[in-house]
Length: 403
Image (cartoon, rainbow, N blue to C red):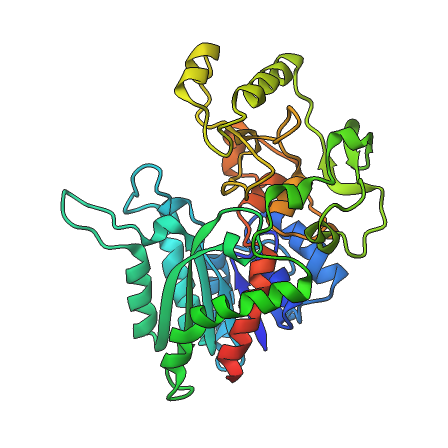
């Protein structure tokens, strides 16, 4: 039950697979910041990977690995149970037009080449909802990238099935729909096709028992997730940023919070550093929260935008009584439901179901041209697969392996 995590990010999927009993072989991630988070938590703290001596324990780009370690990868043929992960999703976003020659689209081919060389028994692939959308070219009917990938993996010798899944249905406190694809080698068993077809049915059926063992329910909302992290609880000096304030815990107010805080004895939550908003920003947030009492989890109305001359593309006042919208890599897109501020990194992590012991490394945020090179903490979390969903998937992938 070993696996390789491609495009691993900060380790959300790897953490889920760790919790469901899988053993990592190695992980490929090109961002130094994201890899540092994965390395600290899963390589060093949990000793989760049986890292081969021929591969450096550092940030690596998949095409460089394919080129420089091709022979070593070929020697893994038949020795790997699972290849997991999904290429970066920006090339398939529904915002704007897809560019045929976008280098991010080529990473799909790198993923497929990796699968062809290693030939794992099963595969698990995740990408954005836009991955399933048809794109038109020269006014002609287009083809969804999901269908192209499905076809190529079938040609590579796998039975595959993909569908859209809302992580919010699986105990995650946000509405987050993603494309999930699973596959199994055609040469394993005659029943392989049916096992793949049943994967999503079993995933759906298993969630109630799984969440029950965790003491939580599918309906977990934003208040259930972060109401113990209010700034009004009190503040102390941030442990990793001495010129910032960090929040302290209140008592747990929900089973979800108790789950996230298992094993935590600290007063201050990791990465729970509050932003330094200017007073005019705080005042504006207060007005927006007041005027949006009956319009939460939605972008600002045109009336509010025009009245206060707000030009920012997205501002969403949140509510505690529902799941949050899909969080992105831009924390200033959201206003906390009861305090005039944006969310902290730890609140972001709670929404994505990272437990509080999981520590994030690197900058908190970045801007300008550096956005294209750096992957700060907010971005690491916004791009991650929720570990709680990864754990449920990991259990079903074990069933796919052994029946």
